[in-house]
Image (cartoon, rainbow, N blue to C red; front, side, top):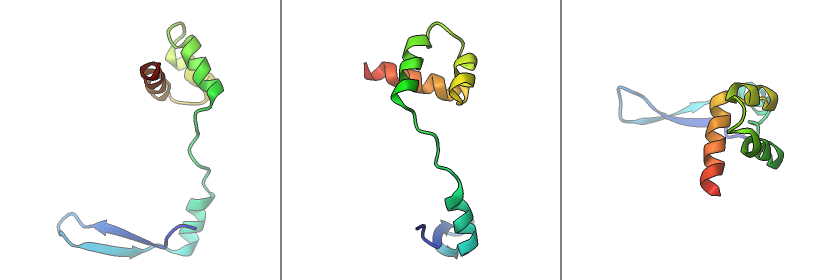
Length: 80
């Protein structure tokens, strides 16, 4: 379960304040699905087609933004 308090620093002040977050707001936030995770299958697709196809085309099929696909491809290529 998420914490119900959040510490923030105000821009005009150096002091840190604790802000209470309502339980209903926390419940709504917890209901949002987690961010997509890259799978081995998607990584293999990027490695196979990254140099041959457009990033927009690959991204549309994988369900990611073109920049995300390109960044992931570059990360994978750095790992090889």
